[in-house]
Length: 79
Image 1 (cartoon, rainbow, N blue to C red):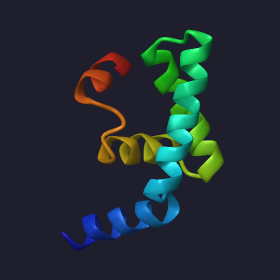
Image 2 (image 1 turned 120 degrees about the vertical axis):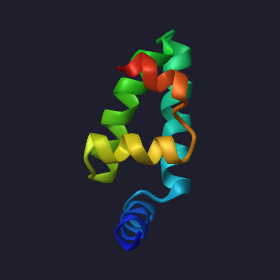
Image 3 (image 1 turned 90 degrees about the vertical axis):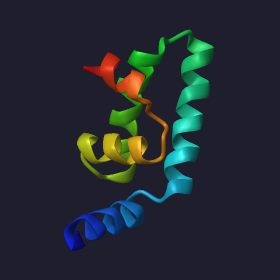
């Protein structure tokens, strides 16, 4: 339990909700204008978020899931 809380705190410090949401929204707008489908958008967005915030792609994925930016349906499509 303590380890889970510590990981959640670390994620919130390294990837503040405000920053993740702002970057996600910016990338989503760009993808919509370019006609990129959701799955390809999510794949590239996770890489860009991870790079921008200097975290792993997996950490970016789990933070986006926690913030409900990625849905269960998206999860299935991402494979």
